[in-house]
Length: 271
Length: 314
Image (cartoon, rainbow over all chains, first blue to last red):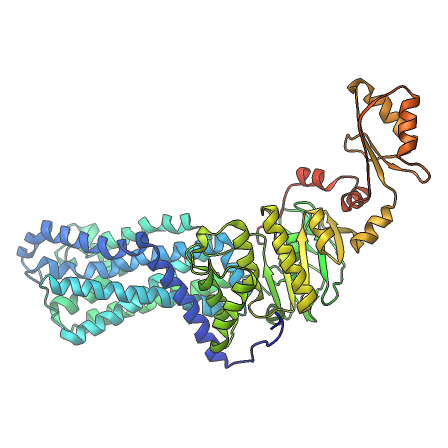
């Protein structure tokens, strides 16, 4: 057969799009799995930090008004957000590398649509975020944490993780496409972690005694992401916390996706 | 035409036509505008002004159609070091929209074609430069393009890998009718491979035609002399101008005038009581064509240029 014969027949647009998304997502997952140094820390570090905090801050549960008598159950919400941040930075760094090495140009030369690249990349991040979340839930259950919202709550928790991963993943993609360098993406990591630490990750907001910290934690959207997960674990079904958490997660995802789409159009200057 | 902000006019009013099934060699030093031209023709960089069509499609208005009929291996083989050769082909066949049933067979066919079957399941990070280039070529061929762009495909390759790639590119044009647009800074590559050559310098085409015709335009051979005694250099230089036009670049060399040959030069040197350590007659080369048109040799131009091989976008 010659190199120029038998050009593939036209196929349904949706089918082609789905195939392209699957191809990019598959690559994203394969890359992550082949880099243990990138795939293991998002699993191990948040859990390790959680156990360290739980051991050191267990006495916090004696504070009047503390919502549970298990600090581990209280702290289990944090890895979900922290892990998503880790994975986001890794995914962003990977995409930035594609820009630097010219791999994005290779992809631009195919019939791939820009939306396929973004959605595929994000599908890979979301899939890995889901694996992380299942791991955190398994660790919590193994450590004796009872999920107050039951099986249904675990399902909602996984759905919430999916939205958070999508939002942070899109944010990482935006940073990667905008800056085009892995170093710049990694440089944003500490800044995002500041949001995590100035939140209600270790203390319920109403029990934070320092005024400025309580104010900052209240203004910090990350607090509501953590509290959404936390309420499913230690309280059960709290409509307000769920609405706030999902609302903020969806807003972050929508904004990040819009920014990432714009940055991709700017970066892929093909005609 | 393509201009860059705060930069030079990288491509300046070039006008060229490549026939179907032809191998067109785009020859020039670093920074001459070769890669910028390729980026524009492959739709990755919009021209500032002017028009271009590839396989009948306008590169500005019909980008997707252009991309559907071209394959390209750009200057750096942009591969993912964590993926295997087979992974790359799987990805490329999916992104190019090949039907599921054809993907595997097409990938295997191309692995055989570029001689990477045995290395197909190894991560690309462990490939040699030649293997990466061959994989890059295979990826560019996945969707059976009508036009293939190769941007300095053999830069940095050892002679054996270079020859293997030349053979494959030659086969693609001769047996499969693929039109090949090849940029290179290697004279030999353009000479051996290209049906026609366009020589570009400072963003402009300074000569164009089949290599043999271009060399024939120069016509006369050149004589290159090395004095036995350095102190005789100036006298020999003066003497040589009786037989031809100096070639410059600090060399004792002249393009012979009609009617003069090597014997005349040697007799002249002997007659003046001078001695040569070495003397050589060279048939015209593409470098001579470049020299004739620009006043510099290709090698010298490459060293003196400020490369724009990877221009910053916008």
